[in-house]
Image (cartoon, helix red, strand yellow):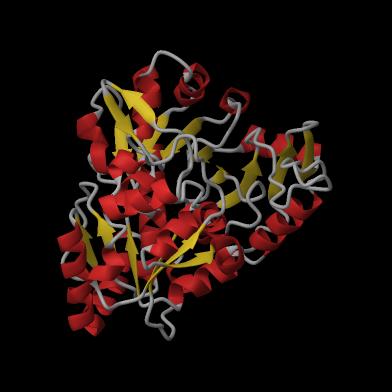
Length: 419
C-alpha cells in the first residue's frame, strides 16, 4: 500500500441529517481533511438509515422522506465547497437506489480503494466492502460502543458489523486500558483549522445539544444515560453566575425514558410535579437558561460555524455514560470551539488533554461556577490557549496523517505475518 496517495472511502450521515450543521462537519472534516493530504477521497453514505422529514410530511405525521431530493441537494452543496462535489454516492434505503456516482464508477471505486474509514460505524453492511484491503472503524461514542459489544442481547447486528473491520480507533483516550481485549488506537476529531478562523465574539456561553439521543444502556447493574441526566445536576447554574448561558437545543426528546424527578434538585422536581408536561426547553427556561432552537440557529454548516464563532465560550455537560464510564472522551463540538479561539468549560470525562487554560473541566456545580469565573478573569489568555490547543491536538493534518500511518503500518504487519 502506497501511503503517499491512497484511494479512500469515507462514510457518514450528512444526507440523512440535512438540518444538523454539526453532524455535517463531523463527517466532512474527515473527507475534506484526507483530500487535503493529497489522497483520492470519495464520500459514501450507505447507512440504511431513512432520511428525516422534520415537518412530518404531507400528513404531519410522516417522518420518513419518500423523496431524497432535498437531502441530496444538501449533500451536494456541502461536499462541493470542499472539492468533493462529484465524488459521492448515496443509497436511498427505502428502495435501495443509488445516487451520485454512476453504478460503474461506484463499483470501480470500491474495487480500487485502499482504505475505508467508517466514521461512527455508519456503514450498514461493511461486509459488502470487504474487497477493500483495510476497513477502519472510528468509535466516536466510547463506553456505549464497548457496552454494546459485550451485551448478549439486542446488539448482535452491531457486533457483527463491528467485527468486519480491521483497525479500530476511538475518541476515548482511556479505552485501550478499559477494554484490553481489542487493539484500540486513540484518535481525535480532525478539525479544518482554517474553517474556524477567529472572528468577533459575543458575550454568551453557549452549546449545541440534544436532551436525549437514544435509550440508556444497562450493564452490570449500572445505567449509562444521556445528557438529560447530567444536565439535571447543573440546572441551577444560571442562578450562580451573572453570565448568560444559552443552549441551542434540538427538538426531539423522549419523555418515557428521560431523567426522573429523583435526579433533579428539589425545586426543579417540584416544578415538574406541578407541570408534568414541561418540555426540556421549558424546564431550562424556567431555571434561567436562554434556549434557542438548534434547527433554526445551527441547521446548516455555515450557521453552526457562525454560532460557535459568535459565542464567547462553551459551557457543556457530557452524556451520563461518558461521565460514569470515564473513557476520556472529548467532544467534536468542543474541538470546533477551541479552533475558533473560544474557551470551553466542559464536564470531566477522564480526558487527558491539558486543562486550566483554554479547556477548563468541572465535576461539581461549584467547579463549574469557578471555571466560568476563571474564564471571565483572564479571557484573552484563555482564548489564545484555546486556539493553541486546537492546533496541537485537533489539526486535521496531524490527526489524519497519524490515522493513515497507523492503518498502513497495521497493513504491513498483517502482510508480513502472512508471508
